[in-house]
Each structure stands twice: as C-alpha cells, then as structure tokens.
Image 1 (tube, rainbow, N blue to C red):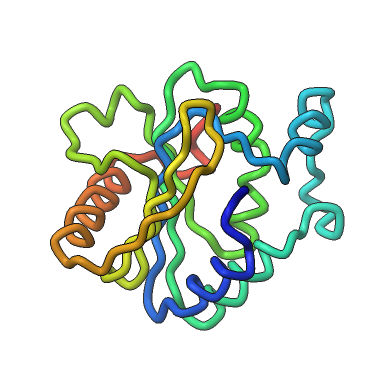
Image 2 (cartoon, rainbow, N blue to C red; image 1 turned 60 degrees about the vertical axis):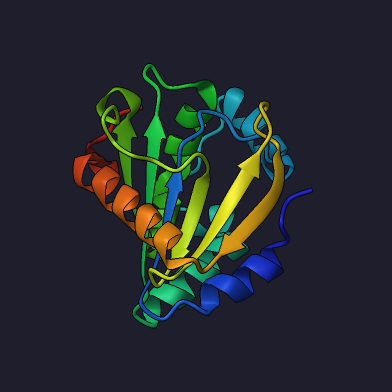
Length: 174
C-alpha cells in the first residue's frame, strides 16, 4: 500500500522554499495508475486542451505550493530506449508542468560518474529527506525519513548534479 496522499500532502505543504524529487526506476507499479496505464496502452492520450479530464488532486497540491513560491523540481534518470512505463509517464508529464513543476530527464548512460543515493527521494528545503523504498517489481514498500544533514547534503548534491546534466521535458523525446 502506498503512502497516503493526505500524509504526503501535509509534508510537501510544509516546504517553504524548495522540494526536489529524484526518480531512478524504469518502472513503478502504482495501483492508482493501473486503469490509466491500461488505457494508455490501448492508445488513449490526455488532451492538453481538456484540463478537466486530467486535473488530479496531486496537481492541485503542486499548483498550491508553487503559487506560494516553493520551487518544485523533479528529475528522472531513465534507461534508453525507455521502458513502456517511462513512455507512459512522459506522455502525461505536461500535466505536472501545467501545475508548476519543473521536470528534466537524464538518460542513464549520462549518469555514470555521478554519486547517487540508492533510492528515489524527496528533499524538502534542503533539510528533510524522504526516501521512497520499492521492491524489485516497482511496488512501493515504505518510506524512510531523515533530517541528518550529511544525508541531506548528499541528496542535494546528487540532485543538482543530475539536474545540471538532465534534459528539460520539452526537449526530451521518450
């Protein structure tokens, strides 16, 4: 079972300046996405002009926190050619950007030489890290949080190194 949106919403709303998210997996098995993923596989795509059809509670949260001045950035390290799940994710990333998130993609081959933590993470205001732990099939297992400044510094440095090399969403073709 995934972390509840309400618990995570409280956490991200506590950010005052920044929230960054590093994703490093090629597949995520998110039960809430099953139906949309199947529809995407059948050729259904979100229409950028039909905002009502794709606006979700998460996008309300993104818009809320970015409107108060919090910079929200997400970087994704991906294998190439990308997995089916990454192609699916890429197809709707415009929704996150419409809500105020900045997103970049880093081909995994360009990540060699970077020091990276072993798990995906969120870093809030450069001080609180939430690691997202997944099993081998991409199912969320649990989260670990720490405010250890050495770990927060490692995650901050890793994210910034990825961000510097990564390709902005509008220029990356999955």
